[in-house]
Amino acid sequence: MRPAVLSLLLLFGTCVHAQETAAVLANARKWIDTLASPSLHGRGYVNGGDSLAAELIAAEFKPMGLKPLRDSYFEPFAFPVNTFPDRVAVEIDGRVLRPGIDYLVDPASGSAQGRFDLVHLTLDDLLTPERRAMTMGVITGRAVALHLPVIKSPDSLAMLRDIERDLLHYGPLIHKANGKLTWSVAKEAHPFASIEVAAEAWNDTAASITLDVHNVLRNHHARNVWGLVKGKSSKKMLVITAHYDHLGRMGAETVFPGADDNASGVSMLLNLAAHFAKEPPAMMCCSSPSRAKRPDWSDPSGARWTVRSTFPKCGCWSTWI
Image 1 (tube, one colour):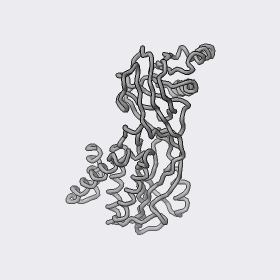
Image 2: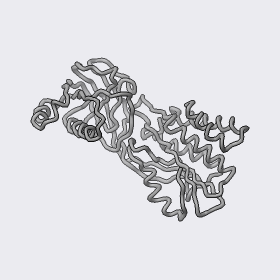
Image 3: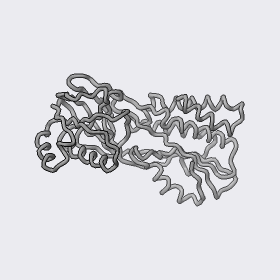
Image 4: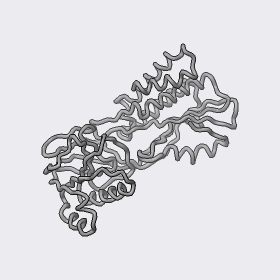
């Protein structure tokens, strides 16, 4: 959280007076702490976390004097998302693994409950059609521990993803993480559970895995949040954006609060909104914590919806930040 706050100070040092620095810092900390608090459930798609964040941001816009873009601060849309609202538990040979530390559920994981014998496979078992057919005949009803080399080639990685998708039609899959565990969001779900295990928790000779993973793939209703500050020109628009949603919950007990991704960015946006509300710019300023997500998240739904449905109707030139 501290680096995010320091970045805010460096930015705002060029556009606010020195005596306002303390207020900017206090607001930055308040907004980051609130957006990353457990009560917002990681601003994800379990327990309405993203909706709670949207309501909070709109509630901040109103006292600042920002106006809705049309009749409301909100712009609704929908997209598919795979979620894990219930308990998530993994044991290997009777050892309980810690979620977020020892393992992550693959964002596109399906469900699996029960104890499974492990079949250890390498790429040599899967590369030729003959070997793959033989392998598929022995893994049904079991879980696969897939031993993979470190691969960086995009074509080879795509091939590995195809192999994993094939294996997940027969049973659960686990593989060792190459580097830091990093979670994401998916808009699809595999037939069975898929687990990424940290190198420190991986066991090359494990005999069994016990899983309690329940996924829910659904159409999620979300909202962009818009606040408008009118400038002197009605023909130009400055659009300041930040995605306010985050990864949310992986099961009932694990939350990804997202202070640096992207509570800090929304905090900067709110500070800019407050500044421009007091000192309107020459052009019209529209401040939007839109759901413009990174490519490695589920998809840029909020940004796409905004570009297609909102700005073609505005009749003005827009500059995006």
